[in-house]
Length: 269
Image (cartoon, rainbow, N blue to C red):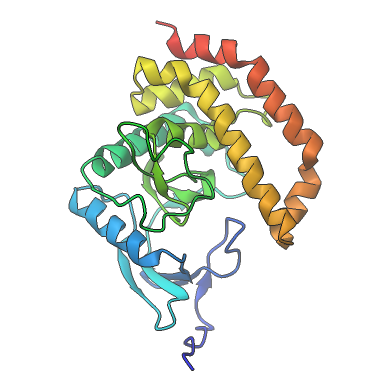
């Protein structure tokens, strides 16, 4: 029977995230972590992105004999983990996240992909299969998945949930975490959404629909969490118990109520 190699007791356990908490190990310049079911497709995509000149992704280094663990190059830099540091909420950091996403999408636009290649549907754009300009989006550019160097977003990690979608979908997903849409009273969501869109260089047509796409992305994220709670996933159950159905309802109502304000901020000259 195929066996996994023994865990290196000297390995550094990398923190952050929920799904793979405690299972991501660093061995010098190499990171070993649980492999997604579509690991071969994902590794091929990362290699082609780098071939397109986008160096803001890890280098795939291989998969264990069982296929359950993947190896990637360690991406040096600084990652914001809870409690999030003040530098993560600066305008410059936010603007650079938008610029990094734009670089990713520009590179991905030159990469052909197969819609039927096993991309995960968990956080995928529901319109990704039919929308023009579809690229493989990251879908989970949260604070823990963006690597900073010298105060600027330089790379993305954890592409497990990447899947084809509209670029504006990826911007909407990022906005949920980086603006954020609710949860930090000291920050102005309308202003910060504009900063993110400016950093990305988002076109006017996409700016006009971005608030509604954020509403759509929030519904997809809620369904994602609730599916995991139904399966008995302890990490997601604990988080859901802290927020709960009522808080999700309030959040979604807030997005609908503030759509005009967000849209005005995005389209202002």
